[in-house]
Length: 445
Image (tube, rainbow, N blue to C red; front, side):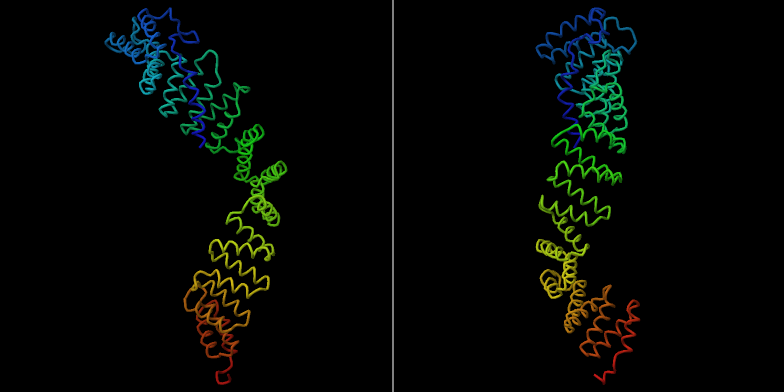
């Protein structure tokens, strides 16, 4: 996301800043009077064409001039007529650049800086062309060289170098240039540049170094930008396991904007992580007054109430959630809430209403327990036997409870059968054997 924003910050400025149609270097290193006469003549010839935006014609004129030289001279070799003078390549690059022909423009600028490594505007325009071709690393190098070779140092050039390296996924190199920029031009360092320094530090996995800049940005901006950076700061505190700083920040933010739901939500999670469930519940309740809760937030609200021994508040929330979407675990918690409220009949009704799968062994086991507590032993036996016959992980327990329920009905035969089967499970063996010893003979029924 930040890459597209960064691209937008750069793209509108590059052409206006770095395109210099004049053959003279603005730093004064290239004096037109000292150019070979043929070079001066070609540049004078194409200047009116450039003013009229006749870029193809100007490029053809330059290429025709270079063709007179027959062969391309190597850099440093004699070229008295200047067929391959750096200013010729610079002018040719400009013709291509203004037509948005970035590849040939870059090729021409590379020739220019190879022949004159101090050609500031050739470096900058090379950077511009490379940036447009998404060759961000070479663009970063070009902007840096443009800064180095300039007599009057322009902080924007260092910024563009850093930003280009960031676009190239080279955050460490980007950080070097951002920090150099901050050291050399501290008063020129804009807040939006600091934003990109933060992105570079985070991308380089150096979040603690980013924290001071994030704090500055959270204080420097107002409105939505301020909130954005406050959120980033809070997120970093939580990611870096700095709960004290996170808590202090969110309490400050709540004092500043008590009606901002997001800060109450953050406080809820901070208190949950601290194990301070009462404070978490309080924050979540305030949050619920400020914005509708999501399904997950409703579940959390109900869970906290249940955990803190407030089942009367948990039950209606669980019920609302179940009405929106069936969920076996929520149903079990709803049943638990009603049992804590001493309402087993209501709990049974909920299983019948919200229990989507009649063969769900967990719900059947829970139903058996409720029926047993209500002394409805016949129904309890039926529920327990269905669980036991499924052969699942609770089969032994189900046989054991089926035995107890049948015993309560004085059905000693069914009870003995169930206890005998329960004795085949290691976990239930001792209880089942003890129960079998206590059963009266069937003839005494």
